Length: 92
Ligand code: SF4
Image (cartoon, rainbow, N blue to C red):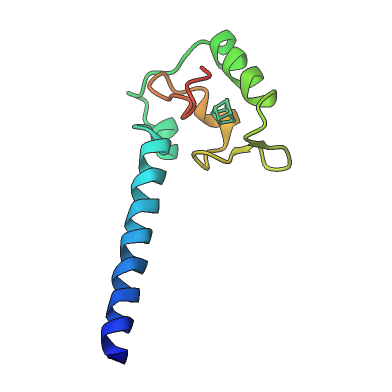
């Protein structure tokens, strides 16, 4: 009996973890931080990056101290430069 409950808890724990991981990956989008180092990765113009970043600066999902997005965890001053990057809430 105890083992059964233990197993059920473990299963739910793993399912919760996998669900949270899937949600995190979806919000992260298709870009990764190291894409900035890839010379073949397309970047947006400085104006476009600033426009995107201005949206982030006004967003309540931005952690003001670190400038990270609470949705995707990315450092937004960098992510906004990637052409393929997207806002997980569709704000830009
Ligand atoms: S990426 Fe989107 S959700 Fe995240 S801080 Fe910027 S505008 Fe807000």
